Image 1: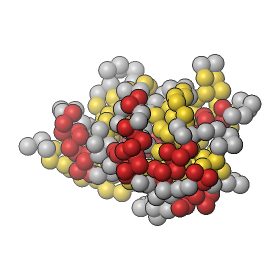
Image 2: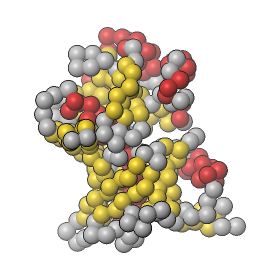
Image 3: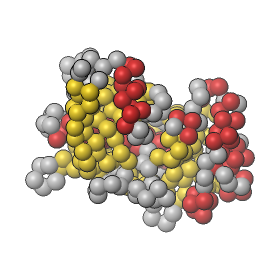
Image 4: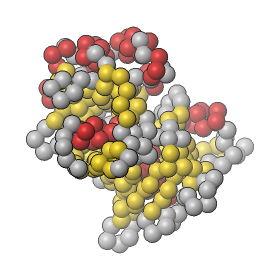
Length: 295
C-alpha cells in the first residue's frame, strides 16, 4: 500500500468553511490517471489538484486537476489553493510559482501577511480570451429554470468563452440570479445539440450590481450541481466584460457562493495586451485539514 499526503483548503475566502473546497496532494508522483480520478471522486469536491515534478526545471511543478468525473485543462481555485499549500511548505521562489498544465503555464503570485505567512494567491489565466458560438437565450433559461425574459442580452447574447477552459456565459437580472435552479434534463438536451462542447455545458450566470458582479456556476453534467467559486470562469468573465468597452483595463469584485452558504470573493483584473485580453484572478485561502490517503 502506498501513502500520499493531502491538505484541504477553502479558497477565495478569509474564513474557514466559506469559499470553495479544494484537496491538494503536494507529492502525487507515482499515481496513475485512474487513481487520480478515483481520489478526486473520493474527495467529492469541485476539484482536486495533484502536484507532480515539472518537465522544465525552470518551473515549480506540473499540476493536474480532476473534478468528480474527468480532468480539466485549467481551473482557478485549484491553482490559487495549490499555490497557497506549496508556499506554506516553502516551495515558492520569492512568492512566485509557475505551474505546467494542459492549458499552458500558470503564473502564481503568493500573498502574505505582515509576518510572512501565506494568505492566498493571484493567478494569471494561461490563454487570451477566445469566443466560440452563441447559445440561444431560451436554452439558457431552460437550463437555469428561468423565463427567457430573465436573460439579459443588452450587452451580449449568451456565449461560449474561454481563457483555458470553456464556459457558457449569460447575464441575468439580479432577481433571476437568486431564483436560478439547474434542470438536469435541460442540460442534457443542450449539450446534445453542441458536440463541440465535448459533453460539457458549464453554465456561468452573472448579474451586474452597483459595486460588484454576482455570479453562480452550474455544471451538473460534471457532477457539480453548483460551484461556490469558479476562478477560471470569473477570470474569463472579466475579459468578456472588458471586451464590451473601450477601456484598456478593468477590475471587478466578484461574489459567488452566496446562495450555497459558502460566500466567496474573487478579485479579477482584465487587461488588453498585444496578444489579446488577459486576466488575473485572486483571493484568500484558509487551511482546513491535513492527512494521508492510502492507495
